[in-house]
Length: 159
Image (cartoon, rainbow, N blue to C red):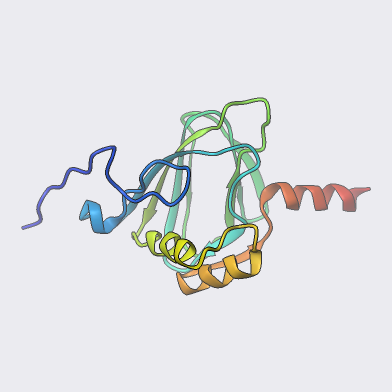
C-alpha cells in the first residue's frame, strides 16, 4: 500500500530564485508541482516535452502563454493544459504588473533532472545552444524563441 507524504513549504529543491520545487521523488507521486512567480520578460523558449503533460493555473497576475502558434493571456483562475508533443512557452510580458504567481503541474514527474543538469553544467538561458542540448537529454526540444523574441520578430516582419 502507498504511503501518504507531506512536503512542507520549506522542503523541495531550489533551482533558482523560485520557491522549492516539489518533484515526484519527494512527493511519492507521479508528478512535479511548483508554485512560482514569473519576473518581467522571463520564461523559457518555445519547447516540446516528449512525455510530460504541462499544466498551468494562474493564481495572481496575467501570464502570456503560447500554445502552438496561438498566444493568449491567462488571467487569475485561468488554466491551460498542454499535452506532450505540443509546442508551448510562457512569459510575463506586462511591465505594469507585479510578477504573476503560477501553479505548474508536470505529469509524469522528472523535470527536476533538467534543473539539476543545468545547475551542474552552469548553463542558463543566456546560452541557448547549451540550454537546448541539456533540454534534449531530459526529453525536451527547443523549437523556437521566447514569446517576446517571437513577437518582436513578427512586428519587424510586419513592417
